[in-house]
Image 1 (cartoon, rainbow, N blue to C red):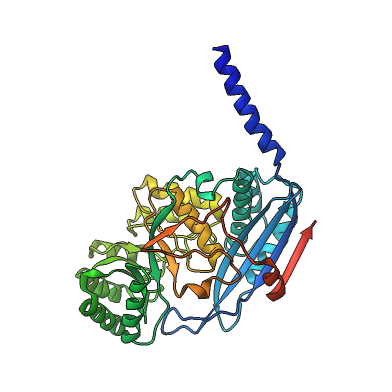
Image 2 (cartoon, rainbow, N blue to C red):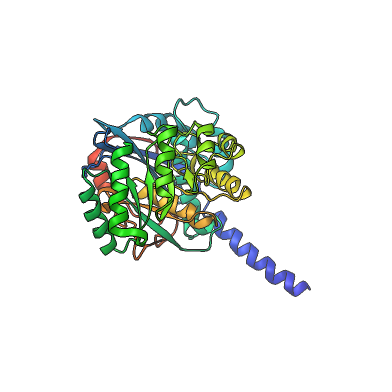
Length: 392
């Protein structure tokens, strides 16, 4: 017995020594707000071109390790600098703290004055988890408790101008290995129904798909399109109405067999999501790690969904850092079924040296520790709209 105890103790001491040698005291924080020069798209007929801003955070520690996170935000007419401005005053509280204390840091940051949704705290939390995973030389999904390294993927399209353009686009996606597609459409009942008729005639049940209505439908029109989708190979109907219309979602679910999901951009806390669960508003929860407060907060949402036997379908439209954070959480939980791959992919790979690409309908975890992605920081430094550094 003494021999077994001695062997175990030596192993534990070795592991603890390694962790102590990597005490993750944050030495500096760098913030970059970047407006990548990429091809812009639209996501609905009444929407202009979307300017996708990339807000990047890089945390450096005394031991030399770095953690990073990236948030993608969307606006029309110009780039949205607000998330970076909201993140800036939070960074002073990070200097000198130990990144291992993720829960304590998150709790502290969520009590700071900040008028934004939890996006700024999300970036900090993701970067802290990235640091911890790198210190342990683990992919982030493994540190989060996951074992699978891949997940089914769907192509998430931009809005296109004609039904013919959608058909051609899908044919091209199929040649790339995609077997599931999510359509961003006109968000007009007559035009959307016409597209569904064309998709049905062209692909039939050979194409599995989702429809995203960007919260623009009335209750009555939502039911009409849901009934049409019942005759097709539709995986889910997303965001037919505003997320806060919990009663409308519950009524829609009572009258259709098509799975109904929210947009996931408004009700970001477990408490608010519980209201929707209690009213039976959705067939799955939906959110984004980079919006809902990072891994620390979104793991609670994942547990809430699992408790109620609901999937958690994470959105990951955005640049590679946004995709990577959501992919790692998907791989760490059993109740996520699909990765969202924005297409065309190149428009969402700005400054990333190791982009995430779907192959044969599957998205795989990035290689390497932490988030597993490499950014071209010299290019980011040159092309940032503005940047800020504290510490170091």
